[in-house]
Image (cartoon, rainbow, N blue to C red):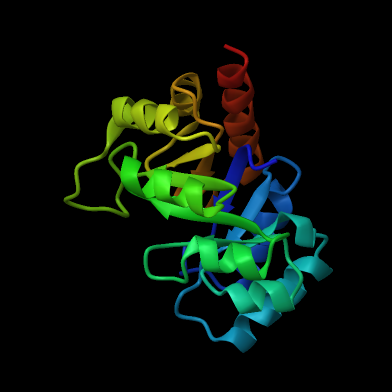
Length: 204
C-alpha cells in the first residue's frame, strides 16, 4: 500500500526538529521520506536510528536515492529520481524493496511503471515557493498522467488541506507534503486536516 500521505523532509531542519514533527504526525501519515541530499551516509544512519528510537517504524521510512543505505538499514523503501539508479536495476537487485520514482511527465511515469516502480510522485501540481519561476503542472495534467499508468500516483507541490480533496478526486492515490507539515506551528492539526481531505476525496 503506497496510498495516503507522504511526509518529506526539507533538508533544512536539524535531526531533533525533524524527529519532533515526525513523531507528532506519524499516526496520520503513511510514509516519512528522508530527503537530505547534503548529509553523509553516517549522518543518515543516525537519522534512521534516532527516528526509530522515537517510535517511528522502519516500515514508514523511505530514503531518497541512496538505495544501498536503505537496504542496509532495513527501512521500507527508496525514492528514486532522474539522478539516481534506474528503477529496473534496483528492482532486479532488491525485489522486496518499496520503490518510488519522482516523475515530471507521462513518459517518465510510464517508464517507471514498466520498470517495476511501486508508485510515482508527480508534480508540482500547484504554485509553490520551493519551485520559484516554474509553472505548476495543474490538475488536468495530473489527471492525464494518472490515466496513463496502472500504479499509484502521489501528487506533490503546493498542496494544502483545502486542495487535497480536489487532487484526490482527479484520481491521485495520495499526496506528498513538505512545508505544509514541516513548517506548521500545529502539525498534528494540519495532519488531521490533510488526512480528512485524502479520505473525503478517495470516497468520491
